[in-house]
Amino acid sequence: MSETSRTTERHVRPYGDTTGDGMVQTSFTLPVPAGPRADGAAQQLANRMGIDPAMVVHSHPIGEDFTFFVVYGSVKHVVDLDEVRVVEREYPLLPPGEVNAALRGLLRRKLVVVGACIGTDAHTVGIDAILNVKGFAGEKGLEYYRELKVVNLGAQVPVPELVRRARAEKADAVLVSQVVTQRDAHLLNTQEMSAAFREAMGERRPLLIAGGPRFDPLMAGELGVDRVFGRGTTPGEVASYLVHAVKTKKETAA
Image 1: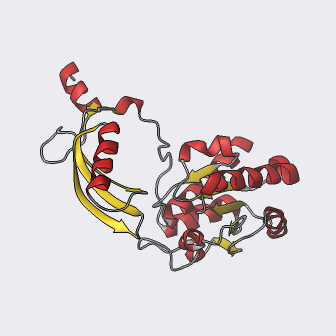
Image 2: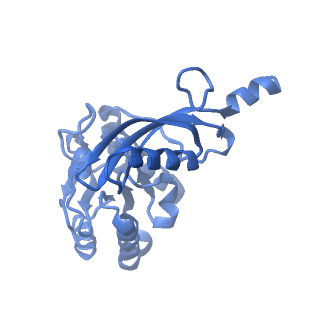
């Protein structure tokens, strides 16, 4: 591969009307009443964000004192793909039949999964999408898998109660969903949860998995959990990870 070809693949710019033109679209709200002054403020902000020239293509009042904007324009920035850091999926996606067969062979019993929204978080859409049989994005939830026993504790579960139920159910894995993110509540709650399991169970703790739209999968170590799933995660991804994690744990212990 030539250096020119590699540079083309490594360095990329946003695409709008033509390849590499740098065109982007962004939206935001300012605490300014709608009108020419508000549009000017939005354009100034966009310029300072590196969008130049910037066009306010849409503005709409939100009440009397706020305005919502959509801005379109060009940026000079270039993305270096070699500097992108993400968590790559290191395990294959398995259909339900293969998940069941793998778990049956690995454990010779059902794998127990306890799920909950902890703290004051009352948003169960995420945890239900993964656990409930109705599932998400055309995939059945973990309750559909014959070799999984799922215990869904619902919303606003205190961390001590989660630990107690996990021990009582002899959980192999604990799934925690967090949607509320004000003042980093999702991070603090997850750290509290992982610390509580370490204190109560030490090395015998279950797999700890956190998920939610604002989580960064790279933060698993910082949060003290085994895996972090972000937005758009499907039940099949979680089920396949459970197989991978159980298999890895058994191989490590051997």
